[in-house]
Structure formats: C-alpha cells, structure tokens
Length: 118
Length: 110
Image (tube, rainbow over all chains, first blue to last red; front, side):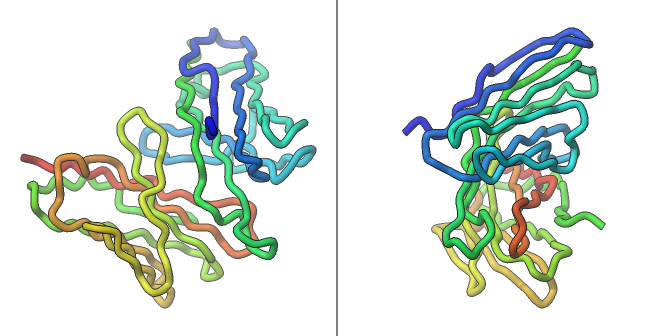
C-alpha cells in the first residue's frame, strides 16, 4: 500500500492563479481531510469528507474548494491564490474502529505540499 | 477557548533527561487521544495512542486525566533523536473532526 499520496510536493503560484492539490489514499478509508500548517498556528482543518459525495467545512475553509467523487481521491482547489495561502498543506485519512464511534483511528498523513503564493 | 491547548515550549533538555509535556482539552466528552511526533519539514506521525489506564512504549509513557481534562507524555532517558515537535490530538465523542494542539518543540542537547 502506498498510504496517502499527495502531489505536488512544492508549488509556487502568483496571486490570482488557481490550482489543485491532489490527494489519494489506497486504504479504503472513509474519512479524508485537508490541513494547513503555519508557524505558531499548528494544524488547522480546511475541509473534510466522511465518504464519497460528502464534504464539509473545517476551521479555515475560505478560498478553498473540495470534492469527493471517489473514496480514494480528495482534491483541494485554490480558486484564486492569495499570499495568505502560503503554507504547508497536509492531506490525511482515517476510519472508524467501530460503527458507533467517531473517526477515531490515528490519522495517516501524506508527505505535504509546500505552497508559496507571491 | 481553544479545544486543545499545549505549551509550545521550546523545551531544551540534556541527553538522558526526563521531560514531560501536557495538553489540556476543553470538551469533557472527548473520546480518543493521541500523541504525534513531527520532524522538521515532515508530516506528523503517530507516536502513541493514549488509553484511559495509561500506557507505556519503551521510554515513552502516555497518561490521561479525565477529571482535569489533560493528557501527558513522559519521555525518559532522552536521546538526540527525540528532538522534534510533539503534537497532541483529541477526538470528541461523535465528532467528525479531531483537534490538534499547536505542538511542543523539544530539543535534546548533547
């Protein structure tokens, strides 16, 4: 298993450009999520999904869109990049250890995407 | 109030020292707890889950105090390779989200 695969590893954008960060997992995890990590701020949830066709907003969703057409893929779209979106982005997935619980298995993270917006 | 609060440090300790980190959480219905380790410019990786009765993995001990709503991580006999940022994670019961602390930076000095 490859686990969680994120691409690209690095990206530089100009203000106003759009792009998609790709995330794929091959573990059949229901839950997938996107975080951004900034110095002193920790990991902040952008969007998450609990299954194909279902997405929801996290703590900092503005400026980002997601879709979940398959269990495996959860792309993150930046609609019009801004310098404030310069950050490290992580995709992560998990599952429920039993049907009545939260998505309480440990998160599996991708390697991250370092995005710079100039 | 933040869901999870963690002392950012930094903690600078000599090799062989014992060091402890705490992480407090605000939701008393929280169900699952973890400690992650993150090396510089890398993704977080699971260090250990935290069980109600406390658990140990080699030099690492994790404990949960539900009454005071905090979890702790104790590292004994610190090694240079323990230098990293340690993140606590809390999952409230029934929630679809989990909450990260901001991380505690540990540097072990020769």
